[in-house]
Amino acid sequence: MSETIPPPPSATTGAHMDAEGYAAAYARSLDDPDGFWREEARRLDWVTPPATIANWSFDPVDIRWFEDGVLNLCHNCVDRHLPARADQTAILWEGDEPGVVRRISYAELHVAVVAMALKLKTLGVVKGDRVTLYLPMIPEAAIAMLACARIGVVHSVVFGGFSPEALHGRIEDCGSRVVITADGGMRGGRLVPLKANVDAALERGCGVTSVIVVRHLGNDVPMAEGRDHWADEMAVSGDCPCEPMGAEDPLFILYTSGSTGKPKGVLHTTGGYGVWTASTFHHVFDYREGEIFWCTADVGWVTGHSYVVYGPLANGATSLMFEGVPNHPNVERFWEMVERHEVNIFYTAPTAIRALMREGDDPVTKHDRSSLRLLGSVGEPINPEAWKWYWRTVGDERCAVIDTWWQTETGGVMITTLPGAHGMKPGSAGRPFFGVEPLLVDGDGKLLEGATSGNLCIARSWPGQMRTVYGDHERFVQTYFSTYKGLYFTGDGCRRDEDDYYWITGRVDDVLNVSGHRMGTAEVESALVAHPLVAEAAVVGYPHDIKGTGIYAYVTLNAGEENSEALETELRQQVRKEIGPIASPDIIHVTPALPKTRSGKIMRRILRKIAENDFGSLGDTSTLADPSLVDSLIEGRRNR
Ligand code: 6R9
Image (cartoon, rainbow, N blue to C red):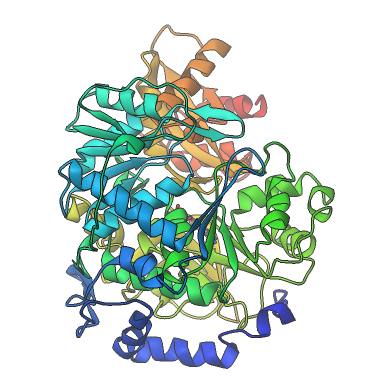
């Protein structure tokens, strides 16, 4: 039996839902989904409330929710909170430098969003167009997203850590004609040259005609005449009403890595995503009026979309947005900010928890954390040791800890413990959210019952589900619905225990989760082989203390070329250039050859085992074209 920690009084007192409440609501969400989601949809204001609720099929794949409803998510996140919340802080921002703070009230947010929407209109952007956002973690990122939503423009946010090449690919794929960026960003005291990166991306040619540049750092950046516009110099006036949107009209595209090919443009639509983020924010964080909510994710990732912007603002919360990093200027930064802003709910990633745990308890305990009520985790499995440190040291065994499993594709939280309803098991994500029906299947798709391990699938659609891969519906069908017919396949492995708690064990496909960031091994490989001296590359993951998974790259060179330290540096630079620093390999292992079957397939299973330092269970190597290669690979691994 695994250890279960009952929810502390801070979680149960005043909770919106207890154990019986969850059981009843969960049962109803499966027995009467239309009734359940019709009610949950009332969390949002609709121009026309939906008459039809669920209308979906996984075979053939066609997913619709609330399809005849009409609404606008900017209205739901901003306008409808006026005048009641006019003076309440909507976005509380702290810059990279400690104590540099901006407070944007709901009234001010409204003014700023209207202005940005009008600027987009001035540039000829109309409903249905795509606009790419490449911004630091500043309020203008949320403002630009909401401005797009206001006028029916589909935003595509690209994480500021991606390189010009990666940005270019994402601009081209969705055909944006307008990019919104900033003169630069600051992270950990270092300048991120966002505008220069946009210039470099656009040099490669694409249909971008206008760039809006937000003045943030005040540094000089070259401005292309006729193309680039300082946001604060674009004169606009007047009102900009919210565009009435069909529930199934696209809201945003967000690129994410898969096991093959280029990153996919995950497309979310207005009604379903809106209801899902509003509902999960309310229930999962058991959000209470007036609380300060801090999600540390960057808006370049889905967690930032759903729980820095849409979920909190749809609930009229105060969302804390942080430009910097947890270890600048020192490792007290998070806790110092919790104290300064009296944060009530704190939501971060295991990689940050593990890194801060290494610094000991002092940096945490010297700060007043009595405001904290709830601690959340997202992005990768949280190991029990990190969970317990979070629970004991950060939360003083007073705050419930919730792990939340979900994906870019799912729009919001899918598996978690509800703070007031469930006991917590360190290392387990918990129980399914309303409407979520998880299934475990074996490699052949056979349904596995009871306490067991298998591949995690979801049996039925939920409102926050992605609708398609932008521009490639067939890829959507292939990636998620072809492995197990009639089921959504998550790509994750999972164990279900005797209490029906789910324990995510990690990806079972060729996707790596490095510090909570998704990376396709194929993407890193294609960046490596783009180097003129590289013949072949095979990338696998291996356990890494802080990052969870590290990137291990096996590389073969062209005939006659020799390995050197300089070459390894060049290869890392190559990957940073093609993708960005987050994809830089931790270990580069130059080898004379890669293990292949006689038919020429790279035997990744063996490469994975060797990278994991697990030499005892390499399995059957007799099908290898050159079995002696294994010894030299092991030797090479031992030397690293
Ligand atoms: C929200 C987000 C999705 C992948 C997912 C899984 C891993 C996320 C997790 C978790 C274990 C958790 N993952 N949360 N694994 N426990 N609480 O991270 O989306 O970037 O698309 O990543 O991350 O492997 O499939 P995304």
